[in-house]
Length: 182
Image (cartoon, rainbow, N blue to C red; front, side):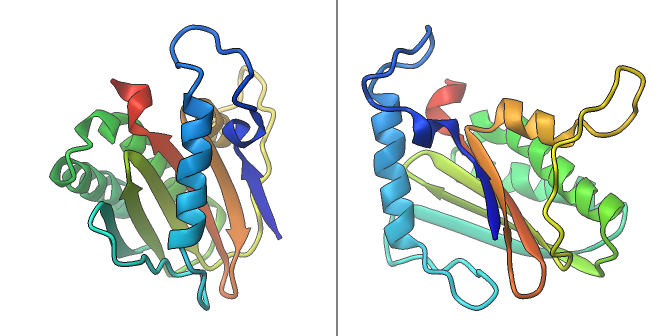
């Protein structure tokens, strides 16, 4: 079972956009998603295997489930996006990667986690894998609550996001298109 939120998939090319994005962008997302579907092969624990293609970048890190890992994941994300020329995505990507890593630290008993980044044609995909198969649910925090806003943040900043169960746990993921941060 998996949970996916992606408003771009639900939009038709003829749907109206307010301001910022040209009408061709939902179609571009569709083309990119089709390309992702053909490039990605799910094997075993959903490890990414990418076809030989010069414009595809990927990186992966296994981190211990301790407090320092959120900061390390932010730093590794920033460094990798800089190397790929995607610095404009760095602030949002770092924030969201940090949120997903922090959720693993706060809500699971995993010994380690895996952070993966992939980029193709200006679309960044970030994944955080852990050993807990419980899929997250969006909370409805009240004004005084200190927790429960992470998925809402993800929902607000990512073009799409989701969670998928694996044999050993789950993968939380989100995508950011570079054109949105020009």
